[in-house]
Length: 209
Image (cartoon, rainbow, N blue to C red; front, top):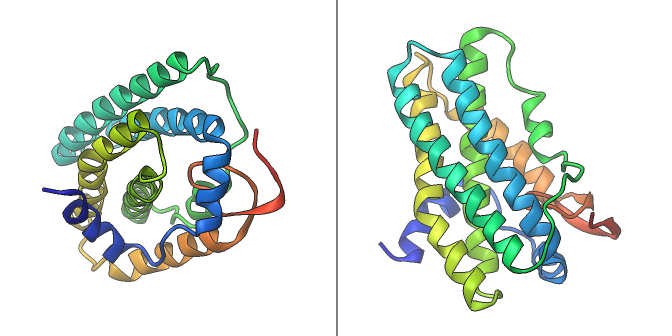
């Protein structure tokens, strides 16, 4: 499967593409993007393990999230290796409000909470995939190869989350999917004071670190 075949379902799913202004800002500070990328891979692994811990009897969640967590940790290690090779020190940075803007709308009841959390996970994975593809053509050979190599697993992660969201509810999920996609689009297209892997359109005074 080539790049266009892998990215097509993502583009059909998301409500918008990444604005060119974000790409320009990201290319101007790849150090920040790489550090935040590493952080996001670690968070993705932690989120997968949290879902496993909260749903110990759901075997599909156990199997798919276990595999996802392992893959995300490998990606985390790969980004750390790139950082070290380029003389960039890994450090903590303030998070973009991107994920929290969706998370605060997750329903509190048990069934709704699981469904919504899986939908949000799907959207985050889809956006990661879209941004890897969007920025890859502007990167040096090493980073381009690495980011394109992530498309296969990240595109599968997006679908795994979405499939699980439908599996563990008796109601159609499309309305909730569209609700969260609309929130996600707003975040991606709105001015953002931080430059991060999942941030919105950079302001003139955007903080890079």
